Length: 184
Image 1: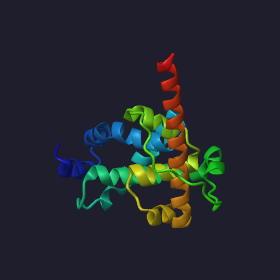
Image 2 (image 1 turned 90 degrees about the horizontal axis):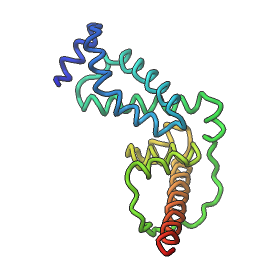
Image 3 (image 1 turned 60 degrees about the horizontal axis):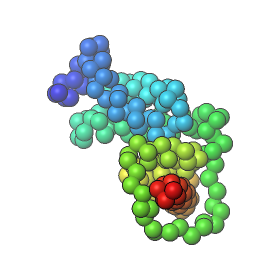
Image 4 (image 1 turned 30 degrees about the vertical axis):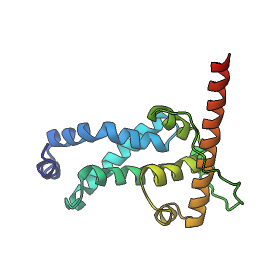
């Protein structure tokens, strides 16, 4: 697919090009949106809002990088704004500077597939989930995350550490259950 021409056609308000762009990127971007929300309905809202922003901002895409990465950045920003705007997420987005519990570097033995791990990440409290996704999945630095969320990079680091510790604990619990079941 010639994305350069597709962008040009979208800028000319050609509906076929807009549908092609949406059809090509929507499934992948739905996954991005779903990682930050707690329901498919909320993820769909973020996706739609994100694509409105994509089409409104397409004139600013200069073709320097990959179009999909540019769209992904818009979707992540849209998801973060969605979390901040909606009451059910806002309460869970409060970050504290409380002392950390020691985190182990042990790697759980259980091999989870990507879907199982994604579901565990989605069970994290929203603040932990958001920072874990931004750092571990999207590849943002703690400084960038801090700027995006209006928190210190230290808070980002501690929230990521807590998310990782919680995920590790849950995986260990799953491991123990699997071992108990296998031993019976």
